[in-house]
Image 1 (tube, helix red, strand yellow):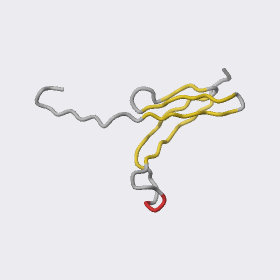
Image 2: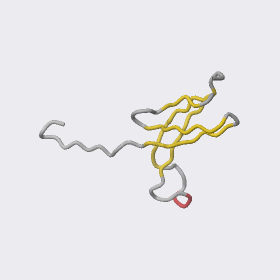
Image 3: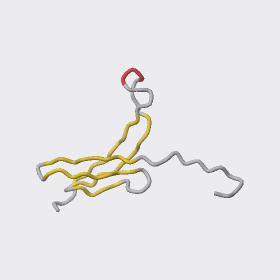
Length: 77
């Protein structure tokens, strides 16, 4: 950052996930900035969004965060 500018970076969200299927279990990570999609077993999994949950306040904690994933099936590997 230039000397006369204050830079602020809140950080990067990383999700640690496990896909379990008849083919077995696979651990993988998705993040907003560095790896927002992954090819896992026979699926392409993409982190679509991450942020405050869009639910009624009585059903979610005030600081609840939600992730939306897009999952598409790919050809057999």
